Length: 100
Image 1: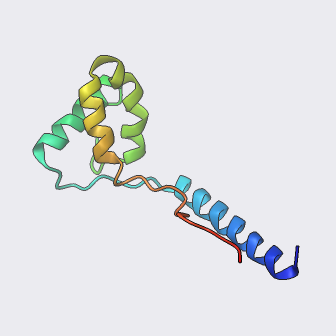
Image 2 (image 1 turned 120 degrees about the horizontal axis):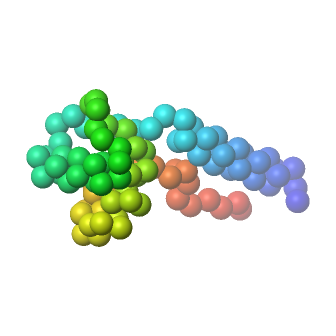
């Protein structure tokens, strides 16, 4: 491998690892002005998951943590909340990478 390709590959690996480490640090919070139906669904998931809502804003990671227990009881509710949370949870941020 050439020096340039090695440098590019190292940069891609570093950026992907840095982004994932950063994503694990701080949990995104759900907005305070949620639609009432969505808010009720999230509160129900939290109750079914033995994670009662004690304060606002609600961390999205806490809702994700409660989802497995809630899915055992109410599958459609779980899917609605999971679909809603998808927009707040970020991956590594790397969609496409190539070396030329």
